[in-house]
Image (tube, rainbow, N blue to C red):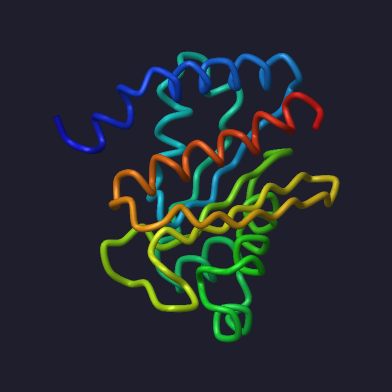
Amino acid sequence: MSNFETLFCDNDLVRRAHALIATCAGLGLRIATAESCTGGLLAGLLTEVPGSSNVVDRGFVTYSNEAKQDMLGVDPELLALYGAVSAPVARAMAEGAIAHSRAELSVAVTGIAGPGGGSVDKPVGLVHFARAERNGLVQVEERRFGDLGRASVRRAALDVALSLLEARAKGV
């Protein structure tokens, strides 16, 4: 079984995705995702749920800096000042997903899944998240999962991204 198949056989993630889609459908909330290190896994997980087309508006896979700029409107100066793996860029990604979609709620993920690419300041396992709402509210989080291996960092990132969406769906 591949790492991708393992992620989607994770009963907890699948159960949570079903519950999130049902809750958001009931609230009339649409979601957009903006993903870098997770490479579309979150959008894929959400769209595995029957009826998700009523909730998931779109997903942006913006792995490169150019994609972040072109698809989400991330300011090149932010990328130059802070780097792609940073709180300001996660925030800009989430806000860009709202601006470039019909969603009321977005979540952004940008990080270093490994095995390479890390540094002393930005080690493998560092992931920044942001949740944005059309009303302007934004929440940013940083997690340092450690060098768990690429699949495990991405799985951990899915968990946090789902938690951010779930918190909003529950009114938190």
